[in-house]
Image 1 (cartoon, rainbow, N blue to C red):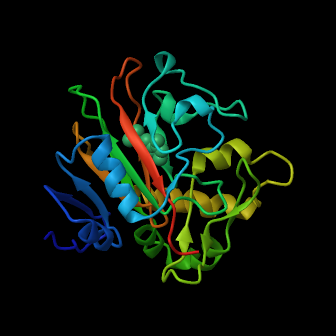
Image 2 (spheres, helix red, strand yellow; image 1 turned 90 degrees about the vertical axis):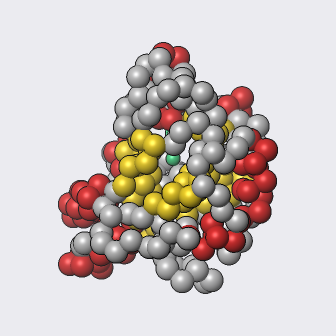
Image 3 (cartoon, rainbow, N blue to C red; image 1 turned 30 degrees about the vertical axis):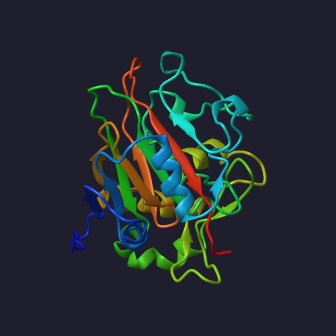
Length: 252
Ligand SMILES: O=C(O)CCC(=O)C(=O)O
Ligand SMILES: [Fe+2]
């Protein structure tokens, strides 16, 4: 079994196979990438073993998912599709997707995110993962202001960190893109002093991030309360396709 790496970079465990139990253990300290994992059936089986599946998107046109699986791919020659607010769904464009928590504006974001590469293209665009705990460890002086940070979102203000009854570490969330989008909307505005805090957090997240390339049939499993993720820009004609599933927390 892979040993946790010391140091400040986000750990990614790259495995040839793993039991459901090992995955649940490992994602407490890193992201898990399993090579040659399989197809949609295996994805759904693993996800279901981790908890209840959630609708895999927020504010999406219903034809974009089947209730369980959403396919990340470049649509409309890179310009993508819009959400119910009329904003582009970034994962459907070819744009870079900065580090974020999936379901950022949900009351309780999905606990686990699974991404399975299902195309057969030669492309090797990385997915970037970043441990929020590791980023915070670089910002001891900002700890208090960060823990109480409120951020605007499409569904009103949300807290950066929340304590939950049964979860030992706080539940974290971040999505700079969405914060930028909603910052000027009345009653969701961001306090001026929070701006610097967010900028520091963004740099720290980038500094501890690790890039991995999902090859066809590889799967990436993340604890979405601890790790954020993103990806660089894709080409407009990219045929890369990732099947994304969200798993709800078993803890309230
Ligand atoms: O394209 C990727 O690698 C990540 C996509 C993503 O973050 C998402 O769909 O939420
Ligand atoms: Fe995402």
